[in-house]
Each structure stands twice: as C-alpha cells, then as structure tokens.
Image (cartoon, rainbow, N blue to C red):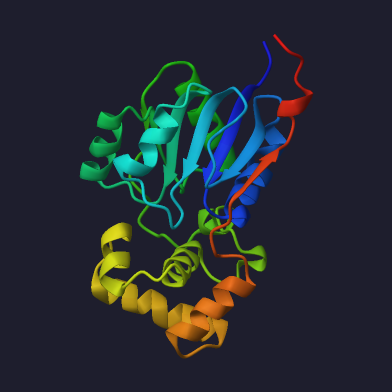
Length: 221
C-alpha cells in the first residue's frame, strides 16, 4: 500500500508551498500531490489539508471542499483550537482539526489517523506560542515575522478591519495591537497602506493557482 495522497488548500502560494516542504521528508507515508490556491482539488486524494492561515474556516468556505468527491477526508490545519470553533467544524463533517503546534512527525501521524477513519482533534496549544513550531509553520522565508504576525499582516492586506481580524483570529483587540506594532517594527513601516504594500511584495496576498506535483504521474486505476 502506497503513501497517503494529500492536497494542500489555502489562498496563498507561500503557505501551500511551505506545508509541502514540511511534509516532503515523509513522502514514504504522506505524499503531497496537489497545491490549490482558491481552486477546488482536481486530483483524487485521500486527505485534503485546509490551512487556515488568513483564511476563513466558516461553513461557506469549508463546504465546497467537504462536498468535493475528489477529497476522501478534510482536515483543517489551524492555530485556532478553541472548543466552540472545533465543535463547529466537526459538525460540518471535517474529520480532523490539527493544531499548528504539531511538529512534522505529529502532523504526518494525524493525517494518517484521519485517513484511517478517525476523527482527530489536536491537544490544546502549548503555553508558549513563540517556540520552534512558529518557525516550521511560518510561510515567510527567513521568518521575518512570526507566523501569527504574518497572518495579521496578510489579513490587513485583505482589507480586514481590526475588529474583523480580532474576531477571525480569536484574539483580543489589545493582543492584536501588540502583533501589529511588533510586525510594523520588523517590516519598517508605520502605516496600514505601507503594510499592505509590504505584504504584496512578500507574497502574502491571495493568488488563484493550482500546482500538480505527482498527481499527473500516478498510473490510471
């Protein structure tokens, strides 16, 4: 029996590329065959991994993937492990809510469990969010910003208000302001318009693109 086939879903090419790179060393167990930005999965895959980086995980956004006959099971890869949010996604039919604090071997094991038919929910996030898992799930080369700072900047680039960002990320207004101040300092910007320009230059704006990796090489069944 071959490795589990996976499609990675997000609106940002940097994000899907980063997850593919993270899973690449485990190709004998999990093989990423398709990367989709704002497109439906075209290849038949065992698991669709929906990265919630700067992406809405509401029913309206998840439903098309849940209804896609090409996806055997859908798992959401997210920072937002709040119990009400997790329960909500499970009621839609999501088979895994996988936390971004998982290291690569743990993520692979969780994907395998989802494929085996289990409903998988990761444990709560560790106390310190600024650990190595911030780096491994960071879409920006060189970790210019932490993962959460990058997500805040991406949402700013999408035109979201502070209130909308706080609601989507389940953080307080004061915590959001802290992320904005720290990210602006690192980016060397002072205004929202400058932050948007920086995000565009660094690939944090949504794209519409499908990348087939090994899917087209698989023999027809």
